[in-house]
Length: 415
Image (cartoon, rainbow, N blue to C red; front, side, top):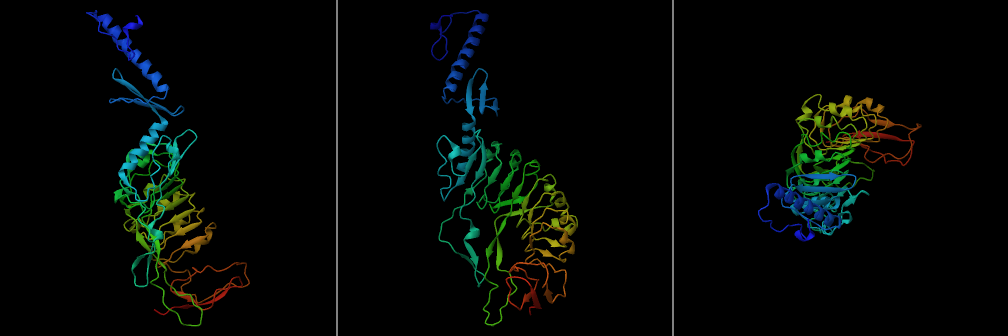
């Protein structure tokens, strides 16, 4: 066919009364010509769009995406376009008082604040943690009043959690902590992020029950923090002490503020997360969960766990010693501000990696309820005694020495 019969857009001039077969051939040639022309334009970095897309196919190796509608159009989508579109779809759902997202414009989203990419240009990390969280702004004074210690304006992102992030399937790190997602549920779409190894949604004002959000993240997840309460200094227990004798008064010098309202009916969501290294659930309501004598059994399968934080979880009853003793790699166990009705088990001596044990304000009893004198002089105990080394309602009447030999008289403080 002479070239004059096709214009630059691949359209042929009207054909007068062609036969049916000739009309079909002309239609096929038109389609092929359109496809070749548009494909050559896309390879020259010309952006095209189509109003009707019926199929999308992405090549992970080349970072190319193709979308076409037979007979209606053809479009090209690069990996860079795809990830930029996903992030820009996330932004309009949020208000940004601290301009944390002010750099989110331009072609290369890998240079945007909080965004990190692999060499393949896939987004691998999003770090949008509130740069000035409330945990660093407030104290509770001696009059039990919550007082702001900062004149800075609010810095939290506020709004809803857009599902567009769930298309960033190369994401391995996500931190949205101390923002405000307006009491929404933790989205189930997180299960699409199967490469996720670090997830921090703590104190981001999520509400509701945790159900299936993490079931599919069985092999990848190493670090999970969905805490919904945080510590602030509390000076209410302080009182003037005019005695010349150095004393360490019993009392708790911090309290918890609410950063959401999450609850768990069971810990079964942990059963597949066998690669977890750190698990932080502080403030998550476990009151109903802890009513079962077997509530902590799913913890037994976290053999790689190094740190477990269950602060301020409204846990009632006995300490689940049997389940915790299975965590042989555990170096930190924090269960302060609960209501535990059992002593610290002597078997905890078998947790040889344990370096932090916190049962502050949890009604826990020492293994030796009648202890009045602690004498560990002439032993292999070296170093200084931590100031947090208190025994329930007891206090030391002699000053802390800096090194051993260590010997103390311990007296019950009058109510």
